[in-house]
Length: 153
Image (tube, rainbow, N blue to C red; front, side, top):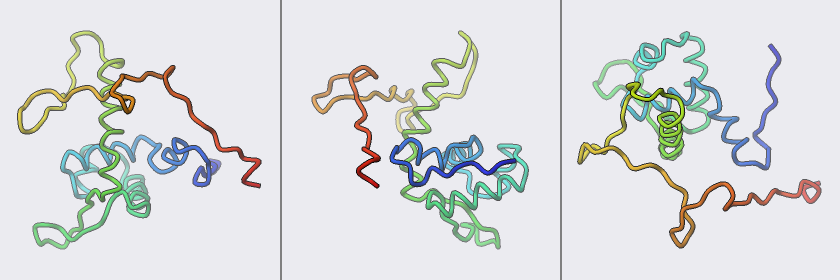
């Protein structure tokens, strides 16, 4: 299998982000960490992923500063994986993927897990992109200013 090209120096923030968390196992580990999972065995049981792949993804997420390793909170010899502030910054990304999936990937009437506000038990409001003045923005309302690669040379 050919090694994929690194996007760590790409001028696009989406490309750099995908270089770190762009495979399904990494995002599912992060999802499970938001759901309170902390131990290797918990992730493995939840995901059903091969142990070597899980170990590799956990190592990468720790190296990237998304997860931190800590001694087990129950005093055992195990270690736990905790979301760092950088990892917690992915919360809206995970919620955005969840909400997109709810809208487009389930048949009418098909059951799926729900995200609820813990204090009220009510469904979480849909994430929306708004202007500084509060106006709802769509793709036609935004533009990305690309970096001129000729200036970088």
